[in-house]
Amino acid sequence: MPTTTTAPTATTTTASPATAKGAKPRKPLPAPNSDFYYLYETLPAEELAVVKRVREFMETKVAPVITDYWVRDAFPFDLLPAVKELGIGGVGMKGYGCAGGSLALLGFIQMEIARVDPSFSTFVGVHNGLAMGSIYIDGSEEQKQKWLPPMARFDKIGCFGLTEPLVGSGASGGLLTTAKRDGDTWILNGEKRWIGNAPWCDISIIWARDVADNQVKGFIVENKTTPGFSVDKIENKVALKVVQNGHITLKDCRVPEENRLQGGNSFRDTAKVLKMTRYAVAWMSTGCAMGAYEAALKYSQERLQFGRPIGSFQLIQDLLARMIENITASQCLIVRQAQLYAEGKLSDAHAALSKAFCTSKCRETVAWAREILGGNGIVADYQVARFFNDCEALYTYEGTFQMQNLIVGKAVTGLSAFL
Ligand SMILES: Cc1cc2nc3c(=O)[nH]c(=O)nc-3n(C[C@H](O)[C@H](O)[C@H](O)COP(=O)(O)OP(=O)(O)OC[C@H]3O[C@@H](n4cnc5c(N)ncnc54)[C@H](O)[C@@H]3O)c2cc1C
Image (cartoon, rainbow, N blue to C red; front, side, top):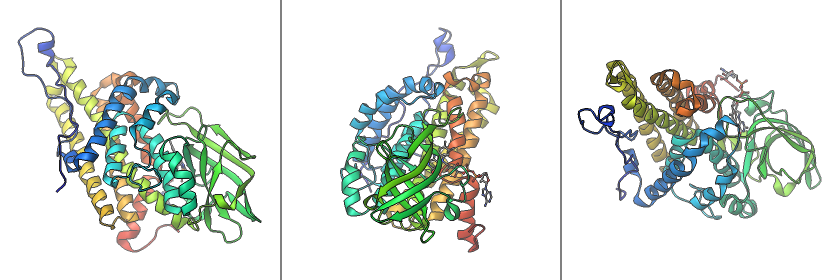
């Protein structure tokens, strides 16, 4: 059994409204806490200490400012120095200057970040999981030694370009972006859409179809020094507004053979990366639901109607109970998911099931949170609207709900519904 210490539960209690008004003193109400089954206690003490550090950073540095950035579609670059200090770059990966730790630690960190801001957890997930993960899983020893240390320090930031304007769910079979070998270089042509961090980051992992063998291959493209590489920021999003998503154009971009991911020789190798990031999105969506639940619960303790806190009404309690049930079921699932990984048993279908279940339960949960806030549920200042909107992107990216269910469907029937 791992050594445990106290989990990072909320430390303050909410004074009952009657007490706050100076009326008859009442027992303080419990502070919102979304760890109902004490799942944080499953972490060993040294990993729990990291999660607590992340919680403190998110609550003291990110929470006070993030809604303003979200409303303005802006990324908080001034927080990056503090992110570097957190020591979470390359969490779950061993060597190459990475933070190491278990996959459970990676999950708890992503959940913790999303509990305050799903955009921030997406920024970390794209950099850590998709970009670093591609190099860690599919790169050669030399590529890992060159790229992972500066990325683990957040000195170089990465993105991951798979989706295209005309190819989303069908990426496994039909990428239109091409790679053509020419001596010691490759020539890339095509477009990538929705790529998180792309408008400002340093390197892009670009997945393209080799015209010689029709297989998907991965390339490390240096954004700022590769002629023909350009990015337009996608404007007017209504979810994950802090994340800067880009539309990348590659026009006769020359990439040296040494920047081709040496272990990325077919879509199967891309899918190895996606399995791990779907694993992480299940944690992130659980964190998103936790943030919305805690905000709605606090609101229900403070908001008075008919002279009483709305949290005292049976129908509101029913919603809150359903929310913590969804969250607890998701948490139990993802903790088991981490155990499966540690036992070497996590399959694509396991990760797909977690991603589908947790994002769909998150979607229900954030909608109930929005409902509990009444009109204030659609105002960004009350936090819940941000979680409500952001969940929509978590539900869709890294493969939609339908695609995850088709992966699970193939595993349980033995029959593929897609190519
Ligand atoms: C905020 C955000 C960030 C993103 N970040 C990245 C990123 O960093 N890098 C990257 O490469 N991509 C990224 N994506 C892209 C994301 O992975 C895709 O949006 C997703 O895979 C779905 O593709 P699509 O949007 O083209 O939808 P489509 O594939 O066009 O699907 C449209 C609808 O059809 C359904 N559908 C499709 N095929 C089937 C089928 N066979 N059976 C049943 N239903 C089907 C889908 O489930 C969906 O409901 C991001 C997307 C968003 C919204």
